[in-house]
Image 1 (cartoon, rainbow, N blue to C red):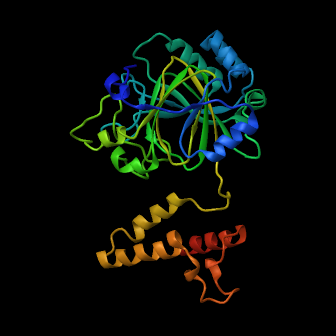
Image 2: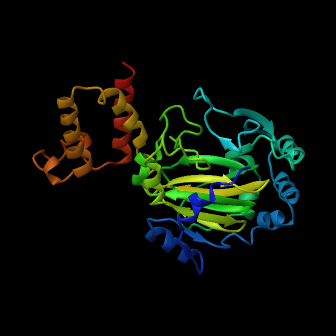
Image 3: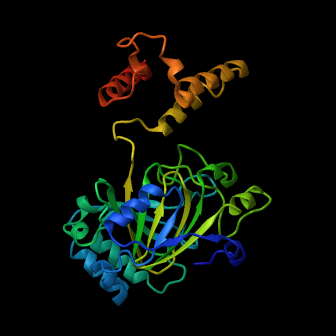
Length: 343
């Protein structure tokens, strides 16, 4: 797998490293920070980390000792793709998605070890509770009162295009090594995002190849790099990625395992902003300019500013969906939208 241009990474700011005393200290840091940070050795005592330090095979054996006998979803890329799971020239995916049992997948990874042109093999965002017995209990981070989604990511050398996620994210390298290149949320214009619907994994991704950026095609990418941070992680290290931060992820070893935790501070019953954006593309984007200006003003008034003037003149009890949001009110709005969209 080719390395990123050393000149590209040499000038990037390293992600801040912090030390935490205990779970309460980690909780306080997560609550207080709106920028990424690294905690070296946070999960160094995990049995999975210790197995990986023996060998990649020992790590796979450890995982097989906990896996459930069921089909796993696995992505298999193209030979010669340099580990990049991305689009092909026709904007279709350059990888196949298959179903197989974990022993079969791991056997293929073992067979390909040492082959420089082997296609990337990647198991992404596998639910630890659903696909393994006891793995989470033996290898987890105490995140206090949060109820995160715990996922495991396993595979060979891979490159995942820069993307962002709605939840906060604590990413823990268990086996191998990973490099994260991170950008603040406001850098999306400079990352040249691809389609919103046709995506490798559900989120729009940067079209820039970080190993060979095309300055003529993506001139503003240089501006993004001026705001970038880089994190080089080894087994046992953890990286906090705040919600909406863009991150390009590289699995650097022949076999890599990452465990991550996603959580949202907002209630689960709230809607997804991406759904609103998709609907606005259909309903607002192609309106005449004057009408678009009107709806921009309406969104600002009702959604982004949302001050007391919005409802002060409406009697209490008669404000409808302008009342403070609750699970019941969210359910009413969802039902109304489903009826409206089905017409």
